Length: 163
Image 1 (cartoon, one colour):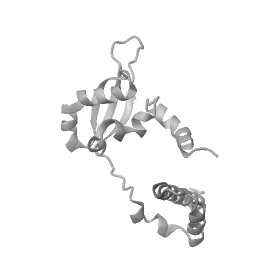
Image 2 (cartoon, rainbow, N blue to C red; image 1 turned 45 degrees about the vertical axis):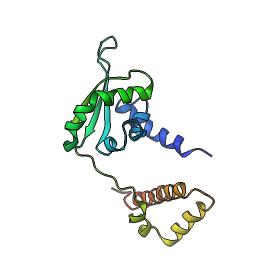
Image 3 (spheres, rainbow, N blue to C red; image 1 turned 90 degrees about the horizontal axis):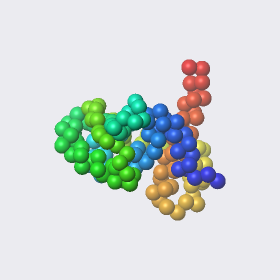
């Protein structure tokens, strides 16, 4: 049986590398690295490397920021750069570039989600049976949301196969 973490990493690895993220931790552990208040208003967008390997300039981390937060981010960017590099244990990034693009706030509250209403009763019962052996409530809720999303995605693809 494979771990979910391994499956997610394999499917997202190509996207991370395309945006310059050779290490996915900068994206997956962003809140842990920068703190909750900064993470709510920012996200790493991509990494720009120098054109020539021997250039003195190192990599630039491009951070997407809500426009209202960009000025505050600019004031703390040296401190933020230190925190990010300290997380990796060496100087990965030489500078930060701030791009003002509003972040879409994603609601993670699965109780208010419409997914549960869209599953058929048979699908819902089958999913809950599969998760019955999991003791952790948080893990069970997360897997239920994931399972629901996967089922709905398959149904969506079946319905829109010809498009």
